Length: 320
Image 1 (spheres, one colour):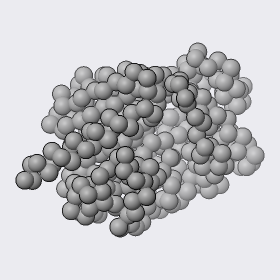
Image 2 (cartoon, helix red, strand yellow; image 1 turned 90 degrees about the vertical axis):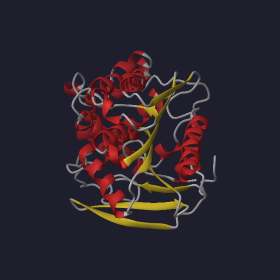
Image 3 (tube, rainbow, N blue to C red; image 1 turned 60 degrees about the vertical axis):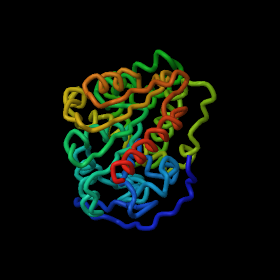
Image 4 (cartoon, rainbow, N blue to C red; image 1 turned 45 degrees about the vertical axis):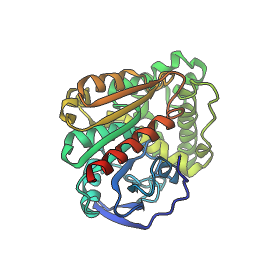
């Protein structure tokens, strides 16, 4: 891993419409191989952690915060924020606008968790903009996956799930739990919003705790982060990311010609291996790596780093 303290040499705020301004930054070598990071959540923001996967001598690395999170504005933690113009199609358009703004022809796309869903959706719509894909902790954000993570995972953590379910009104407990939480997270009463955000993030910290040595996510101790994150995740999950069910798998053939590496933990029960496996079946240029003792977002870093390094070296070889 490279130092996370590598500082950006350029940054700015990009007006993308609908009143949204995206924070972006560029690190590394201005003449290096272009790459962009699609962070998870949605709502996590692109922290300095992501810089650690890229050799600053070889890469021109672009980080940006997706709509309504991180340093982008407006902030989803603001009391009256409107999320109606924050959907998958909006984010895909934002990525293309940023690529054109930075005058990049093609870039390697690195994403994890929600960032994997967004990476697939972006690359299937804009394959000519993507040189390679490196995705880990794979999701497709289908209705089936959302039902699993918000309801069926209760079979693994029954007591914790019962608390999560009971955080919404009784009349809504048999329906779409993500949408029920989304409504609570926008309640006029700040106490209702804060309680819903804590309940949501407590469940987030539970369903990923399926591998040895798991440590709770310290970010959930911050009330503003909790609210921002819970609002955006429940907003996207409640609508299954506005994607036609199974569309990413059916369109995986559109990725033909794009080299890709998919990395997933066998113990990632919150996002089962099935999605990664099915994407690899339909994408002829994909390599699937399964790490037997890894969970969601953990224990995968060495393989991610190796893939990113390999693509940089291959790019240098082609130039020479």
